[in-house]
Length: 399
Image (cartoon, rainbow, N blue to C red; front, side, top):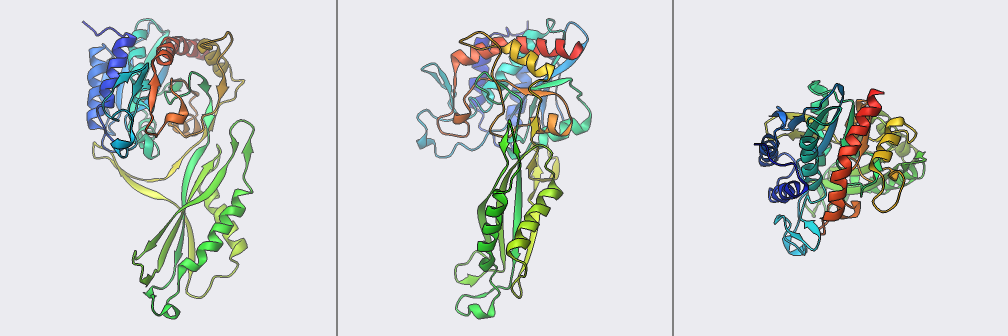
């Protein structure tokens, strides 16, 4: 007999997931635990794909387009456990909250999605697909590869990143760029023999500050932003003038911003403050890249660019979502707004054009902190409203 898809069982499952402390690229135990729960709930086509994503299907009663419920399997590091009021991986339920790393980003919402798909099986106008993806915290390799594979083609996506019960319709993306400064290393006792690339750092920061004052702005998402965040040198020896310096830039981009154009804008800003380079120094701008490896052994060198996306607030699907969700404490449709952070929705809508909204319990201010928690009353309400949301999206897609 299939497990009862109740909120209480979903909450117990969420607490169990918190006790599995897996970072990006280490999600095997999480994926297997999610698959185990999907099977116990009677979901169909339960599997782990070659990238390590966990997938399961709640079969609907009709032919309406499939809605994908998406959350991710990985979490960020918890840091020093002594800094937490509640142990980060205890999965403790106390004082009306589920506590711990992943409580709201994103194991609590993931558990609710898995149980929602089970509760909707045989009831929803179409199929409900749960896609628990890997590597979201490192730019979304799991979702990127899932959509590129062509194995799933949902009509709409609900991303389970916390919205506090609002409906989110987009976010800025994130790009990590590097300004590489090269020179000639030398002994610090004789700096005249070296060509110190650190002497260019001030000009780089000035160029980035000028670029930051000249950013596009979206009426809903707000302005893009760019800032220098880190300086790395090689060799890392304090009595040696380095020959290699990398200045890292964090750029919160708007939908439509692409890699080549971002690199060109940094190059132009540098040309404005460094029309001529000192002898023996070179400057190169590039998008940061990382060789990522999933727990299943899949490797891909991926640029560190997470796309942004934005749904039109007047889109009938967005309006249907807001009406279906409603508000906890007052009549009327849910508040519609963007997230402040990036999600896998950048891949579903920003790259692949699949209509995407966000809905889940949890306050954004608790994400990635040592106070991470999920209010149980809000989580229960969101669990109830998620069923209405999925069915409203399917009716809107089919109309």
